[in-house]
Length: 337
Ligand SMILES: C[C@H](O)CC(=O)C(=O)O
Ligand SMILES: [Mn+2]
Image (tube, rainbow, N blue to C red; front, top):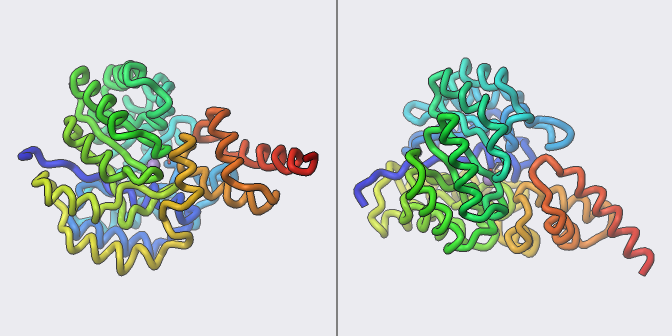
């Protein structure tokens, strides 16, 4: 394949979920230098839930938003720095601030059926001259046709790239194929894909997306990200090399960074275990993993039961507090039986 695939690294941003938003500026600087030197095109850095995400609801960051972005910007030589923005969590003022600090890419993220709320944020990104991306989260919750309808809205607001985002790691390879190919046939924007590895399909699904015409894919060192993590950068690059898919990343450098630096920083190993597997199986937002684990311990209930129930309730990002309510309910039900 001659087209060069753009790699958007999410080690610092999605990886924030896996470390409960506690990366220090020293860790951010070290990871940024390694990623930049390895050749990744874009490095995303914010709280896991994007600009304005540091809160009691989502979890407080160790470092301020400004310090996270500034440290990343100060440590890149080639890569562009991206920020994530969920309208309503972050505002246009947050975006202007991130842009002033040196961010060049904005990914405006909405639930897959709510693209309407991205209009003013996409337009703001464009008016700041930023590389502006629409990011349709929980894409498994919309049929391919409905997802395309939402993507069309983002296209009409001016988004230059639109992502199929598998937030729950719940899409099969055919599900990805259908969504990305429909985008390719019907959108004039670039197309992106963001994987989670809960069903062990992170790399495979990213490759399917590329085969169907995706221009950008997300990945992170050792898969560092919510749930069972994202597509592991070093694994994705190894497969892309074998398949002669063109990109800018040095395989040995990302292998070494994943093994020597990223894995030792992990607090909870980012892996497929019975809980992260449940996320993909039940179609639950990957960043609910640590919340369910904590609530399960606190209320003495099986966290898998929590995930099953919240999956049935079709919870979306921002409804993390439901997890406590469900854990309390389950504890009560268990007492009665
Ligand atoms: C706010 C989420 O963590 C964004 C994301 O990476 C996803 O939906 O997946
Ligand atoms: Mn994610």
